[in-house]
Image (cartoon, each protein chain N blue to C red):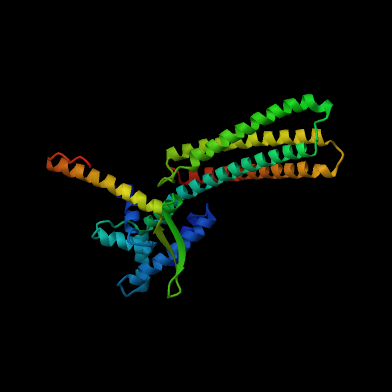
Length: 109
Length: 229
């Protein structure tokens, strides 16, 4: 189930700012309270796929330690896609909550 | 441990050497970070744990295969569309040149030229419609997470369309070759430089399209069958 939403999760993890793959994984773990513990390698196909779709850009950056890392950042389309997916997810989540709680969901404004 | 894992990953990604090189460089840094941040004192064990957390290289390669296939299909489409546009520009340049130097078709070649011109015209527009259609069909799709049966079907359809477009473009350029030969004749003159140069460019483009379509279609079929569901 988590894999079905991986793209949205990766976009959300990059919303605070550009980051390399390892930092993206750390951010996902931190923000999910360690609930999302994917095989770490899974993040790279997602990053490449999102870049190919134009939702992310990337560039090599050399750190002060001299190590080179590929840093990913949301593009304008990526920011828009995240915002759209967030809205859809909230609507879906509200509907599920309402269903489980037995209360009718509020219609989106 | 990390080095052995990277070698295995590079081997699994051998279907796309450029992608393999980039992925291995990224993963090397990731595993070094993961091992360095592991609190365990034993470095070998830290590396071992980093590699286990990263996942199976073949499973990763299967996910990258879908990305690689999407990129290759898009590249064939781009080459096709570019070739069509340049062939069109060459045709227009030749026609403009003939008008400029008042170079008409010899009387005795007009009947044959009329037939060849019609075949040429239909073949070219067929290449335009099918080539651009194939590009839009496969080029605008995002790569799926994995190469499933549906995506393999789409790739096969796109490859077929690219082949039909490449064949139609070859027929069109052959028509151009015949029409130019009928007009220019056997003797060489300085005025023939433009038609011959433009035709040479068209022939080179068709060769590039056929080569790109053939090599990419073969590679795509191999990768899709290796990693497909």
